[in-house]
Image (cartoon, rainbow, N blue to C red):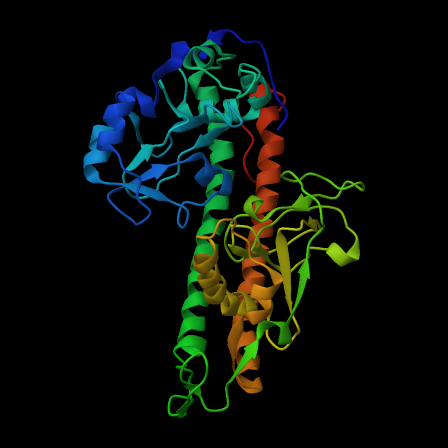
Length: 415
């Protein structure tokens, strides 16, 4: 987003009721005694920067007990709160979504709430987001850049009337609601696809095939007529470029190089880029699997990019769709993950990939699975593209609305 400075005339600190962090709750010793991070769901979520960056508020969560949540009383987080990175891209801001459960602030984040008689909190979030370049300029430190509470309070921003702030917010929130609605539909489609896959291809409860006898196999009893195959026999596997890259770093031609941890988990990720060298294309329908430690998978759904050496790309040979292949691979990749992560250097190699065995249904059932699953995949990809377009439009409007270049009285339809 383009930074819009405007004519600063108020200190952000004069418009805040809360500026706090995790360490405001007590000494390091007290925090160690009262707070334990948990991997399994518990009373409250401990919200972290990675959740915001990956937009992952389902799978990648950490939890704390009820006692810890109440001990951390000064850093409870509520829907709509503004959260800011203290270090690691200090000054980056996020808006807390409604998770439907108690949430507490993790380390390395600030929590901000505004005095809404002067500064609408959502307007403040959008202003900070539009002016991240300005905000980040207040970070200091040679080894590790950090932004302090004092620096946050000293930020200056123009303060239009509350009515003007709320008109601007009304337009921008309308886009957020459309985005959230699409994200909700994606979650439903993903849940439906997984449920159908488990019912048909894991529990073998397909309509008209309930009475088929089972026969032994290396992966356990399977219906008669089904097979066990190696993944290399049903999919093409390509490994990425042999060099390191930073997030969306470009090769010589300006095409981004993708690392797996830069991609949100799920059935699809959407970025738009220029064409790359065909051998290393990442294109619509390609399944990407991280090779070093971070083994989650996703189906790339838009644009072209290079894959780096730590990303394996899978493409179905056409007998099943890529969504079906994704669901087939999910369990064996998770099992490999569990077996490999505990080693000195976590690495998923070609020898592991080649040993993956999967249960292979007969041709008529493969066709039936494709007939049902592929439209779901297409819907998810279409919704992802809609989200991308909505975000692009919102980001174009944001600085123009905040700077007064665009009237805040315009309707969403007019955009």
